[in-house]
Amino acid sequence: MPLSVVPAINACLNATSAVLLVGGYLCIRAKRTAAHILCMLAACLVSTAFLVSYVNYHRQVGVTRFSGEGWVRPLYVAILISHTILAVVIVPLVVQTLRLAFRRDWKAHERLARVALPLWLYVSVTGVIVYLMLYHL
Image (cartoon, rainbow, N blue to C red; front, side, top):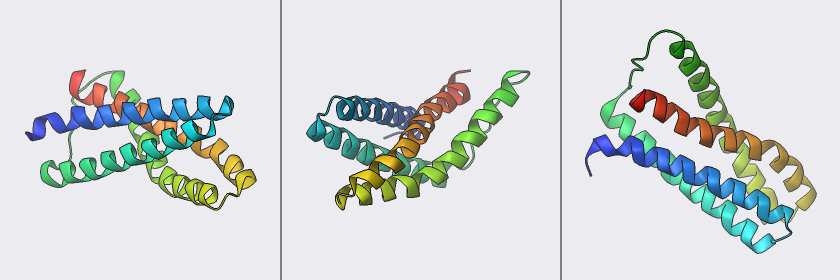
């Protein structure tokens, strides 16, 4: 696979993760527990695939510079910084949320998921936005 398509694939993985997260949320609100579990596990797998792909891509290519100028540059930097910080923060939150679910500690799972879900969704969506700004602006 040519390296030039990897950023687009990564953006698709982030978008897929976002869709699965929303689907998982809607399923649990509708008390469709089995569908919720499938969506959330799929979101974890897709996000893991993204992370592996992202790290491998940047090990080979290095840093990609944003070429935008003017008002869009500080917007890009603000989105990128918040995305990057929360991408680091979300990993242990997701792992702990999963651990609580596997242990069937539903109260603690729900309490942590109320924090983890919006942060994870933000990271997934802003990952797509960063891609679009970096490669298509």
